[in-house]
Length: 255
Length: 318
Image (cartoon, rainbow over all chains, first blue to last red; front, side, top):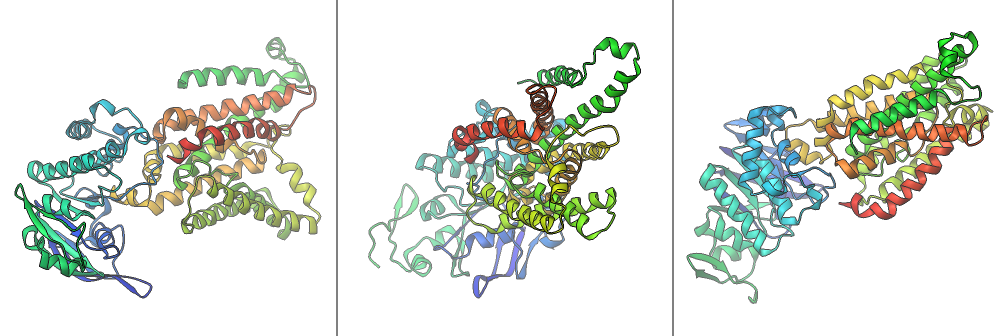
């Protein structure tokens, strides 16, 4: 279980994240939503120890993440950041193999190879496993990175805006995969999302941030309603039910 | 290209290299144990060949490490101030220590090469605009600033000729007893191979490396130390060889990708082959005289570099 306690981060005089406390429920998809600059990515970076918090702490299994050995932590929690500056020419298979790095330090055992095969199959990358990732389309590349995280075999998978630059088809594809990871493999997914409707349709819980502060934290159904959304986004957002999904129709809303 | 092809090519070129020079030495001369020619062979030709092999492999690997760690295809010891810093170090040692010893020069040169490269990486860390062309341009400017400091103090102290003469890359003066420092690059290259996976992971960025539990800073520092060791050993024995660390790793990356464990053997082999070709050309063009190797490397290398810039910009950007 990941517990976040009073976590804060300042840049200069600005509190980017201010005393945020919450618990990530295992076996769920939790979405971080909120306006631009709300501190969602910063919070995610602190949870994944890419960024050090100024005050407060993050507990993984009751132990503060600072005390975790970095390779042990890498076997429990993985993070994918938006990697648009990725000019490394690795094949898909090589990339996925690096997911086993915390276990094998780069010398793959037979067991590692099995994990790699499984991850590649799971993401349907078999046919392109020997292609260089810089030759893939955006959606394929994103799938390759997710395959790497699957090979890393962590309980927690954190993703920072994985739908950026993806078209609708590939966005849906990625979200369905994440759903499968939770439902079939029992993973816990934490994801920063811009598109409120993807958050509404695919996540179990939603955490809403605004100006670095936590404003909402609860099951999706409690958050996706006009009253709560006004609090988060300062605008009127009508919510309609469609095939059992709650869809926010904000495109032509007035204040 | 297959590794064995490169190795066979390297062996053929090595044999050619052994039998080219002002004095004709034939195989029978060696078998006859005719003292003069055998002496030349052992004191001059063999050390020269070894020096070319060590410098070619070393500089290519140094370039490969730098490109991986800086995440920029056009960063190399020549385009990041490493060699200029090493030169500055040698000049400082000559300036401040009277009767400077060889060991002292090595230490100064190493320390400056390390610090110089480290400063460049810090600059790189701070600039937001990380264009593939812009970054090496900064590196070249930075190198020129270091170089002008060397020139200024060298001029003031009247040791300029001294510096420029033996820092011009050339294998002409390589004889037994004058190149052994280059052996330092052997352990450096072996370490680079052992660290290959770590360099590849670090080359995917700090966030990526941390995600996999790799101590990024440590790997970065080890990489910089290896680069400084190799650069120092080459600068102090052979002199500055431009472009080698830039183009060789890039050619290998084009056809093999960036998985260092796979590309290090190729990069070494291609570096040796390339440098052997350049040296042989320099030795036959105005035979029995020689053109220094840094000239032939610069001419051939800059042509390849330009082709890479024009045709490969798209590739480097990806």
